[in-house]
Image (cartoon, rainbow, N blue to C red; front, side, top):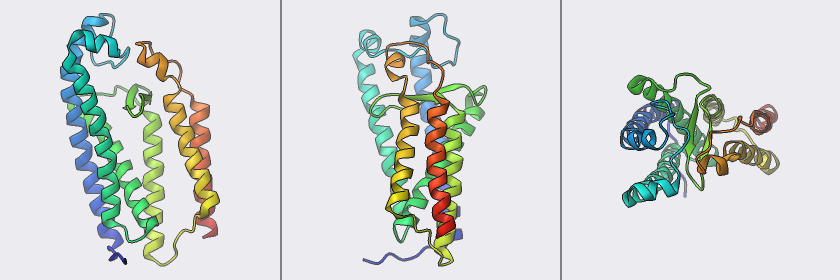
Length: 234
């Protein structure tokens, strides 16, 4: 089955528009969730500053407060899974081969992630800085880290995806190869490990320990170097 090519400039504009608008949707969901859980968080942790995310409300505390809270948590986990499907679907819609599908996915992902924080800043004046900690993802357990870390990943994704899309459009596709793909995937897993490093402590209601920047930067560097070599040799 042969997919019809989409003009690269048109695809890029569509991905940016989607990412910006979806970032707003995501930000508004988080605003509503914070309104729901902020009173309970301050009741359980009076020392917690208004608007702060840590310490987290534990599963036991959620269940003791109201059994519906666990249902909301499960709903939120499913929403996050659906978000990944939506982003992948956008890549599939604009892509005509694997490279362009992947490019569409990571561009949409990166723009969405950046504008999610932009709109949170506009709506509730949060984060107060790029070093403020956030809950990034909940599957299969909480990913946490300073806002700066996912922003760096998002910028890398947008740059790599745009380059992939452009090279395909001019007939000079980037041939990554399975070895470099393996390095990129391992680098991504290392980044995820950095985000999940402290999950047991965070889930137990503890304050986050210092972020594992060396692990994060190792994964980020591996992915960028492998991709850059593919571009240079492609």
